[in-house]
Image 1 (tube, helix red, strand yellow):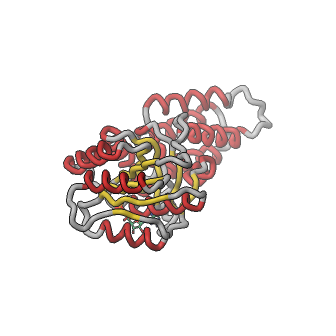
Image 2 (tube, rainbow, N blue to C red):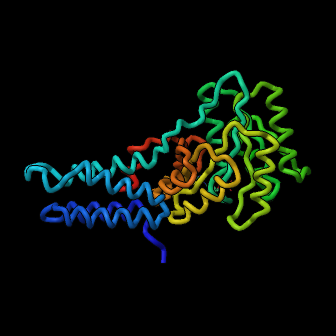
Image 3 (tube, rainbow, N blue to C red):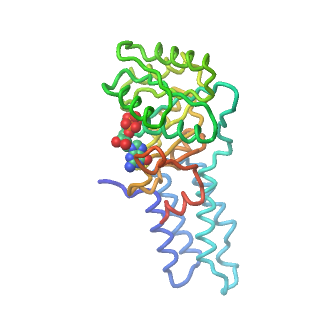
Length: 296
Ligand code: GDP
């Protein structure tokens, strides 16, 4: 059975509350129970869920509010505010600095959209005036280098990779050293996509990280993975210092509820979202519009 996306479940609970003839303590409790259940089943941290429940109860006291007050709107707003604050881990994302090398390593499961996102990220920063370059440290998937090369060429971004070298840490080290020497400001290292069970690939990811000592590690997550988000994000966080998260494929049907779990699991902020296959389909993360979409 495919469980409904977290956002849809929260939206259903809100709708039920909005349709109740009278919003009293029981209706509020029922709504909160449903929302908390959905959050817990999506593996959002227990303490955060408890905080959401208590904070909404404290902020909207349905029993003592005058009857003319729009309790439904107030509750909707309170839930939105809580979800927004759950998406904010209270940590500023890494901001690349000009006139110095910023090595940024991308990690994520195979198919998450990593290679595509590397080019989008480089392209966005190139337009902001950074000197960007791409390094392909994926020797595992046949065709990975060609894919990166093709994307990079189209976006006119310099790239580095090898058809013969089999050690990804070696390529990553060579590529970053070359681009550092040449004065590049954002050096993006694309790593091999992995499946959750592949311990060897996780080891390899660590070796690449050791070889390039990244200033930032970005975890790329497919918005459609729903319930699996927490397990995935924690697996990556355990092995490398995930500093920020990018959620891809938000142009599809997914509501992106997994983002809550990814933030909870990594303690890292979401910085951007992917909204299509093209290099320009990339946006800064806006928490309010993300939450409305999640509940829409
Ligand atoms: P990787 O294995 O993580 O490097 O994933 P890829 O970058 O190869 O992407 C896998 C597929 O997802 C490709 O067909 C991409 O075009 C597609 N893709 C990546 N990001 C997005 C996105 O934001 N929206 C859509 N619709 N497709 C995307």
